[in-house]
Amino acid sequence: MPPPAAVVKMAVALGATATVISRTQDKRDDARELGAHDLIDSTGTHHMAAARDVLDMSDLD
Image (cartoon, rainbow, N blue to C red; front, side, top):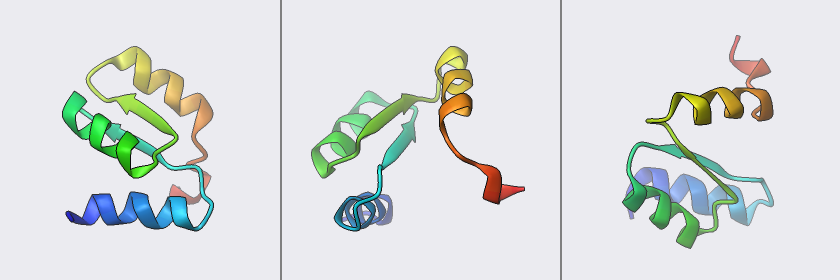
């Protein structure tokens, strides 16, 4: 299992809402199978802009 997949599985197992950002549909499909709650297409600027309003990135400053 690739490391990002392990992170998604761990987050879901700990009860977190897992959001995956990816360029490819295959990876987003894999993330959904692993239990990711939200999937964001990083190739669409409108998707990324909408995600900015939903995701809490305050700890990244």
